[in-house]
Image 1: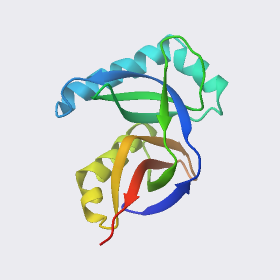
Image 2: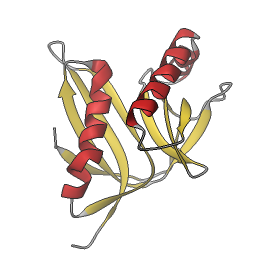
Image 3: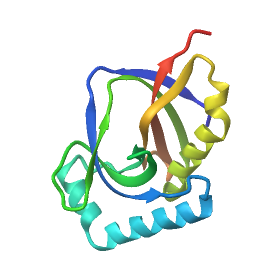
Image 4: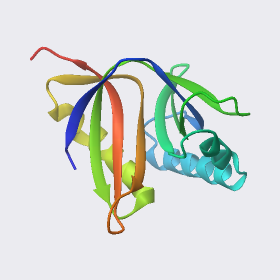
Length: 159
């Protein structure tokens, strides 16, 4: 799963999402529960479906920093005016793209995220992650498998 590439995005873009602030970034269990509760809430109340219908239908899991605090949510590419949603700015530049495949759609985004922050970023010597956020999508592939990508804004480092 440690395949990665670099893609240059020439213009700033926006994502619209619903999410939660993570008070203690190292509270993995608590943050996972808080994130799962938010996902269940926006799925049950139809807010996520509303947002997906306004965009291209592709859902993203988004990690961002808002007011100096870690934030995690679920949203779409583009800027939309939806009650209780936030619009996040993603800057033009080089993006580190890490891909992965799996058979569990609901776990794949977390697996890719774990791989990236669990060691892959330290292995990549010519780019460093600069944020302020990242996003991951998962879509159906062939034969009951799923394909996902995490996009992280990165800066080239002279080695």
